[in-house]
Image (cartoon, rainbow, N blue to C red; front, top):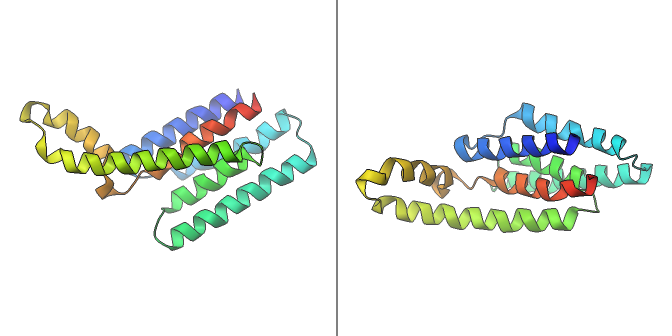
Length: 159
């Protein structure tokens, strides 16, 4: 039930980032707070708690650096830390891989959407314009989608 709730929250966060380029703090906090509950439910040992905490802290520091360099928004920093905390060391590499591949795909799709948005025929323009706007790299890469995908990749460790 906790992982299902986390999956729903991650999906809502991804949709919010696509539409508005915003990650609501309440949803990020709720997702983050589900992590210790999942660790309790899985009867994690104290060492596992430390691994998840240190992984989350490392993620926070890494994404904070990217934020300071202008490569990421503040919501991405918070969500990234929560995703890393959920992943811990056991799911870190699959989560990182999914985040990286999804982020790259979103960046390429965003550039493609921007390039093609000028050439849509008028009858299909509004529908395609909504999709192009959601993906547009001009609005920034919706990296919350990539982070949410990585978070989803980390959830099976709790099943």
